[in-house]
Image (cartoon, rainbow, N blue to C red; front, side, top):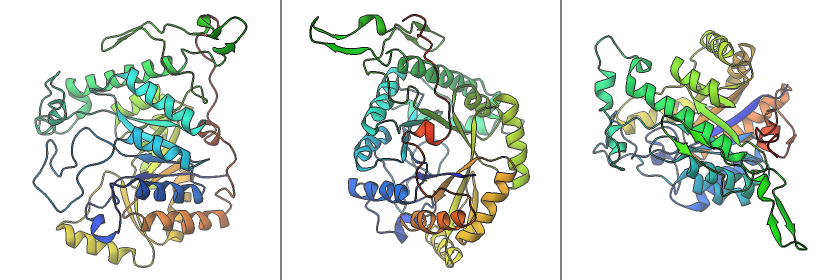
Length: 388
């Protein structure tokens, strides 16, 4: 059975000092084109592109004063649209926040990406809880994150009303986007020269969404995406984001640190949604010299690397052992975070995939043209079919 494999692209890599060990020109289109074409060369399912509404920082909320780490990034949706014509089979999954941005804008952006890529678009939906990010927009005031994290009784973000509201808003945003993607029937564009009608107006639908956070009339201004529903994904670490992902996403990224934790997370998620695809995140340094490279970067950064995800340091063969062990625990795919780019990416695409292929655990060629089909996700019937 083919293991699903994706990579998460961010700056020069996931180590804060990665740029010190990389020739990467992180603010050039050519650099990103090289990364995504390499990922497609390795027959990976998709790439995700990180994004946020604030500069990278070592602080929980707001910018720090460090000048020795990468700061700044491209808009992920726009970047994915630039990369789409350079690829033909790999999925493109940019991050777009559900906070401070209108779901109408996100929906048409992802739908446009799906058209440009001919059915390979996805969306990593993400909340933006920081007060410093809210100040970029001036419409809402958020409590400082450190006040939430340092609340008496320990860290339980799901108990905080602000955090719960952000995830409730995110759930509504995903629902709005899904309705907008369906607001055009697939055959709404008729181009009937005899009658002079370009579209059949009866095949465009008002979504009439009215919720606590949004009121959206619709229809979308962008025709129905080739996939019908682009793939929605989310990163989740605990019960509240698990519930969000289970309620609206097709794929969830989780962060176990052992096979036992993976098994427990899978069991919890399956109790919420029996169909969602479960991917595990791993931050990886690959090769015979992986430990040396990681130690050097730690020294340059002045601190040992820490991550929400498990950190793997070793050979592609050893990583393959871990992936297959976690698959037996119920994990269906992996989103690997390369420690440095492009070095660790090429170890994934050229060595890890070959190792998995030798164990009959990875594809020899792409089996499908769209991301939904590649992941084995069902095609949904539009909720407006009866209206038509």
